[in-house]
Image (cartoon, rainbow, N blue to C red; front, side, top):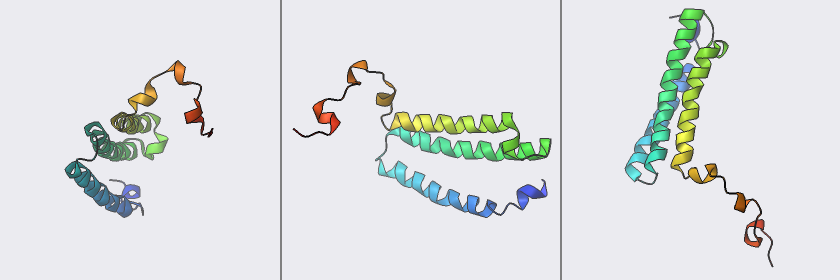
Length: 116
């Protein structure tokens, strides 16, 4: 492996940040306070991290460049972040945000914040 990957000063911080996230996932799963689809979204964020690490290594070894400079690898890795974010949104009731309801375009007196 190239020395630029091994000498990245942020690498230890990145590795350390995984521990609290894994602890959060463990707690969230056991607490049963989150919708199952939202938990899947949080877990898929770890898949995004794994794919990004692999993509960064491929970019460095194959192209001698950082991941951000290899568009197809970078875009592919970021697609997994978009997927996990979408699943999180849907898990927390985001399907209501995705529905188009033309009748609700005008706020009622209750929604406008005005008091009578």
